[in-house]
Image (cartoon, rainbow, N blue to C red; front, side, top):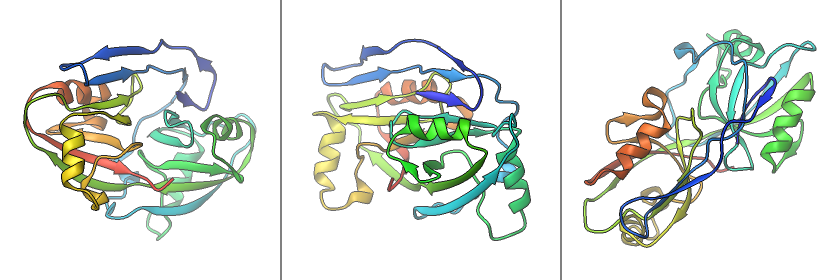
Length: 234
């Protein structure tokens, strides 16, 4: 599910596509999008130290009718993953935090709770729309590099993604090269591809520059896969 704080617009249906060998499936899910982003990613809002997961609180107040300016990915159904930060009160929150030690909200952060509401991405989104005094619990993911060797057979990975998204959300590991890679890395979680990981880069293709569809196409090509994974504890 995709959302943005504004009015909702339905945008497509679920498609299941067989890729390569019978065990290699990709589930493509263009999800509802709410209109009116009103801006795009501001490079000045991006922090670069993602060596370990990070959790912080973001208190935000807005007047009635003011936009948050967030585009959100609700694919995991538990958290709201920030896709873009546009013009709005979150952008203003970030601007006020520049030059201080206060963290800023940026793409790929997860909103794990709003005013104590957690566990449902839909409920989180509803509170973002309705409440004017917001306390956001933000989970910043860890970045992990994985190198999947070339070989025979399929990758054996199921992913879903939004039509305008920047990541591939892993929903299944099936028999195939990734499963064998994980077995060889048993006991070393930082060397495995796991359920709920988000694939942000495949070889030279990066999601925020090329989009999720390009990530998918690169993942489907034969050969070795150098993956940049975003992993959250939420």
